[in-house]
Amino acid sequence: MRALVIAEHDNRHLKPATLAAAEAARQLGGGVDILVAGARCAAVAEAAAAIPGVETVLLADDAVFEQALAEPLADLIAGLAGGYDALLAAATAAGKNVMPRVAALLDVQQVSDIVAVVSPDTFVRPIYAGNALATVRSADAKKVITVRTTAFEAAAGSGAAAVKPVAAVADAGLSQFLERRVTESVRPELTSARVIVAGGRGIGSDGAFALVSQLADILGGAVGASRAAVDAGFIPNDAQVGQTGKIVAPDLYIAVGISGAIQHLAGMKDSKVIVAINKDGEAPIFQVADYGLVADVFEAVPALIDCLNR
Amino acid sequence: MKVLVAVKRVVDYNVKIRIKPDGSGVDTANLKMSMNPFDEIAVEEAVRWKEKGHAAEVVLIGIGPQAAQDTLRTGLAMGADRAVLVKTETETEPLAVAKLIAAVAKTEKPDVILLGKQAIDDDSNQTGQMLAALLGLPQGTFISAAKPDEAGRITVIREIDGGLETLSLATPCVLTTDLRLNEPRYASLPNIMKAKKKPLDVTTPADLGVDVAPRLALLKVAEPPTRKAGVIVGSVAELVDKLKNEAKVL
Ligand SMILES: Cc1cc2nc3c(=O)[nH]c(=O)nc-3n(C[C@H](O)[C@H](O)[C@H](O)COP(=O)(O)OP(=O)(O)OC[C@H]3O[C@@H](n4cnc5c(N)ncnc54)[C@H](O)[C@@H]3O)c2cc1C
Ligand SMILES: Nc1ncnc2c1ncn2[C@@H]1O[C@H](COP(=O)(O)O)[C@@H](O)[C@H]1O
Image (cartoon, rainbow over all chains, first blue to last red; front, side, top):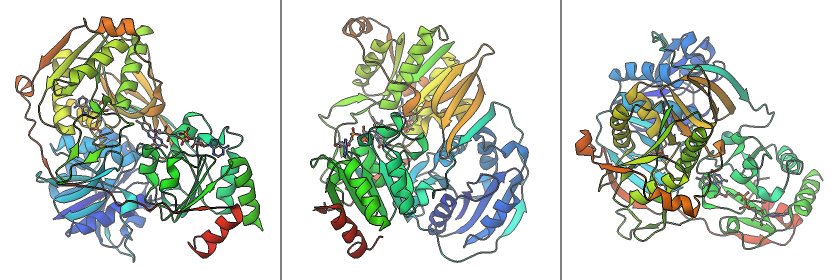
């Protein structure tokens, strides 16, 4: 059983989500290699070589992989699949984009978003917005898997894998990259933050959303949001937490003006401690909150900021 | 331009599902069923392209039991022209669905195939990407904007983890919708009546020559661990005290 993990990166830094995929790969019980496909991404390969348990880093360094377009990347991964029994990536936007394409090229039914490895062919994954956990056994000879990052803790330690260059693939030129607008933030990344303060429709306006950010900053946390807050334009799309947004599990999640729809809960109910601030005592968010405060956002949040500043 | 749109019939997003007591699956009997919300967005987009003159014809495809016809009729009432139902009595996995859509696409020859990014029952987020691979087409997943141009390409904006990405895709291509692409319309009563007369063809996996045997065996379905509701605190000061001294997270 050999597994190949697909590294996620921006050509300079390895994304922490990769470590969760590597840990799931390690739990399959065989050798683990990692693929770094990008352009001028030697620094990423170096970081990947230090992941504990990784034997070889395959480095595909070529302009064709610079923007991680799904078409050439899937061709590359499918081409390397011969030497592996399992291919894994984090269930992030990038992993979700490319892995099913790889699976179809290999005629494999992918197992999405696993939260546990039961055995090398059997996995647990959430369905229906996390309202049920399905245990599935794959009959495919090769496994293609995406990994829920909050469910696999990165192994401790440091490795020293060898780096081996692999050849690029030809670009069919089907899709062309035009631009990427990345939300610039000095705050920690949502999916790896220890504290998250998330705002919902109850905040009322993008001006008022500054209260949420202020609270997050005092706590050194990240800012999250419900779909309603993103749809209303209070905050960019990449802050959405939930079934169809990001899955998070910080030590502390503070939900402010969020009602607690199942689609939102799906993304945050594995947080260690949940605090809810909502003026409606009947809001479903209180059913999952360890600490609830029935109060108006505009009184409670400034008071909280005040109290923490003291 | 011809647009093919995939629509799945799923348990309505507002319904809380029940797990069968023997753990063999999810009990969907007698639950309210609806069009997968991401597919409503896909149908809406295609119909808008038709209204703007970008698209000449909008064809729907659904894979499922006889009752999936109702979902297709909903899409026809939103403004699609005709529909194809691939009738199956068992659950079809994303790879099988992608193969069925690919088979239909070979005869329909659409310029764009629109799907939802994710079915809210299986939460797989696979079918569109798989379909693109099977047909050797470019893919634009999780899109929040799409603009066809004169040169026969489509510019899409994709929702990615760090923000937004813009791609230009050659056609034919496969697109999957994200929540912010548009706000789907409600079908009007006259349109619902009209939709009853629109053509709806029925075919089967056997007719299309596609093997839909599942690759994944469902061994067990279980309740997720539930959280206990905690306490309601009386004040901000009490909250801070509890977070510091009880939960020890501050
Ligand atoms: C296909 C699909 C996918 C979805 N995916 C997601 C997802 O990934 N993530 C997600 O979050 N949602 C998702 N949703 C949407 C979800 O169903 C809810 O609509 C959404 O989570 C509601 O957001 P909200 O709690 O901010 O707004 P609301 O439900 O409107 O709640 C606002 C809350 O604020 C409170 N409030 C109002 N004013 C104040 C005040 N002054 N002080 C204190 N409290 C106040 C109210 O009491 C209320 O409880 C999805 C929906 C669909 C159909
Ligand atoms: N049985 C089906 N019938 C029609 N379309 C489907 C079916 N299953 C999946 N799809 C399409 O594929 C998208 C993604 O589904 P999934 O990969 O299952 O999450 C859905 O939003 C639909 O557009």
